[in-house]
Length: 294
Length: 276
Image 1 (tube, each protein chain N blue to C red):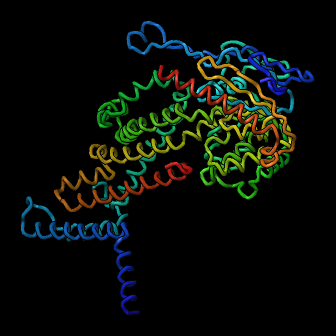
Image 2: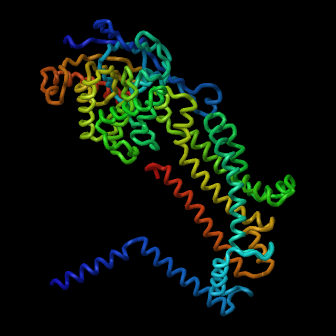
Image 3: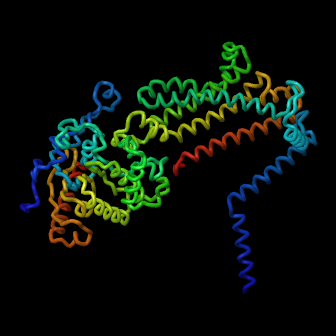
């Protein structure tokens, strides 16, 4: 535990060169239970649910951060709060020193279920995003942005297809292109490959790595996969089980960039980091199970 | 050997033709139709049914006459069935369009707010199961005009399914589409027109389809009391006690109903985008 790339516990303010872009300060989220006499009479009363408690994290510019933790630990809740889709019960999110409490195009979001509009074509989905964020951009330039981003994710030729005509992997490529087309400062990804088969997952991870090397946008990704986190991240945030989930440890991933699967896996620290994460996930998942039984 | 093989192939080909579900269904349909017509013809000829029941052949002959002479006019009680059909279709078109113009925007308005949806839904649910003909006396009293009353009845009958379906569709738009819209910072109007309405379109169209079905059901009943139109044609033939023409009219009403429904089935398919 004394390794240099490990820092323990909740105050994980790693002040690198003080170029913090995203700052999470004492974030808690409590889902209020059903109270009052009406719910008590109907037997639907329930107590408050503390999803996450006192999350503190600073993320520097151009850093790729993964958040990993057992199921139901509030990872998605945390990402929703950063995205502005959900509000924190306590604490605040600062982006470049400004408090954010609502969604905005400075943050591009990739959804687990792709969230493509089925009535729009590939091009239409991206166009909707570009038009919404840059309403004053000349049509020609909009068209160029759309084309570039379709090219970036390797979907040239599928512009006029509707999502239902594409495979899951292709749909998520559209999701990624849509998030990048608005040129956000920060890319938020909520288990982006969770619904894909292993092979497609691998392809898209490589794709994300390639795109990230090109653009180096600050990225926060939620994942269940240790290998995925190790391949893509600069830092890995490991969360404890919920309720009242918090940050347990933050791992620094020292692998040089650009990365690819084989060089990463042969790095001397790879197995050690992987073991560390496996132990953590194993411990937390066992704790979740124990809590269910008890 | 080769002969055996060839005959085997032939057999399998034959089996394949009969294996096809659609072909088997078609054959069964034709067979049942033949038996039905034969039973009808024989029964009528042998006077097994009630007095005055026409034979199948006479009815088909009448059908052929009406289909080949759709447009003639010898006064209001003697018009080609084509004229009557057009009159009915016109009433439906006006009443139905009016209903849709009210129901779709109102449904969207109600559906956008969850509270409004819950608050106003009881009205719609209460009025939906009321037979449209119950409104007939009210319509006659208000308008004192049979034409307007007919249109009023169609409107009131076809408003509810479209309204409830639209409101339901709008209220239940997939939250992930709305999240996309939110993260992009889209305005309320843009979200409504570019996301909510297109997402609710399949529900809206199926509401319109149910409404159209109801309009077509109701117009025939309403016209029996109004004069002119297919419903009146049936009523008139009842007064003439000429059953074959009533059967012809029933057949034509059914065919037109199928066509109207199929138009909406096609529209539904057009907006389903892979979801069935």
